[in-house]
Image 1 (spheres, rainbow, N blue to C red):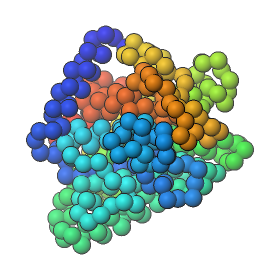
Image 2 (spheres, rainbow, N blue to C red):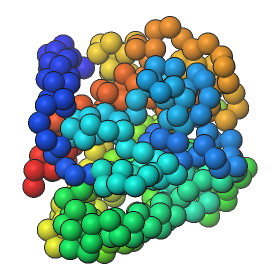
Image 3 (cartoon, rainbow, N blue to C red):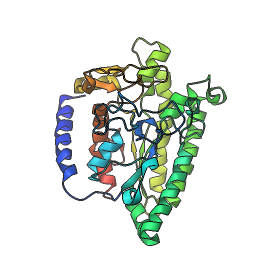
Image 4 (tube, helix red, strand yellow):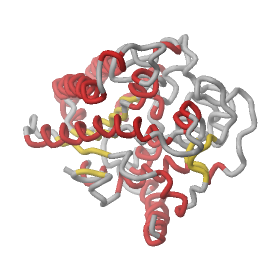
Length: 355
């Protein structure tokens, strides 16, 4: 990362912190669909090992261990701040009354696009079920503000979809639990994911959604999980990165198709989380790019009540898969106001919400 980019990000961060406090919200609400990286507590009461409502998760979060897979705030938290929503988007399980008008987080740790993804760990709420939960939310909104206002409200809300990582980490690359890698090559598997993803987006369009952010899987071959499983002595597992790149290319193409076939004023953008080599970010203050900050067990997760690293602002990864709060902020800043079309395409979130 060039030094000028680091300076720009620091200035942008300072500007956005003030920007988030003052002024009206840029959208009336934020609806979140996704997996581990976006879960705010939907897994807390599920029978699953994929949960994070214990220390050291949340060690730097104001409310402690809430079920976020992070030491502090997620990218969703950051985006909500930048949009001036002045609220933390609640998990579906904890929504109350009019809170739902400002958005709901349906994301579930270990969940994926495919129904079976992550179920070796226990229950989760897959993409299909997240949309079913959103249908229920819409019924609740209808009961509060009526039909016409609900339609207008949903058209203006932002729909943030960050899902697909787990379909590789907790499915395709776990042949001892799932047969997908024996049935499909990487091209076929990615196309199958895109087909399902596209159908679910059509469902959301029919339900009234119009503004979408699609966030791609990252370079999963560079995660501490992949490095430890493949014993690469710190080198990324490029086979895994190549597999997710196929999906990411198809996801970007899906954005083009949807934008070229506008559904009643709908707009779409793509955030490419695999756009940069994580090793490059060392010059941006992230000096530890291949190790987790917290002591971890066999399920990628932090061991309960263990002491994490003290230099976590320098770490990319919190556990063997998810990011630290500091790196989440780095990514959220780029998604919200970045200008590099290799990362945000065709616009950034700030521009999208003004359309």
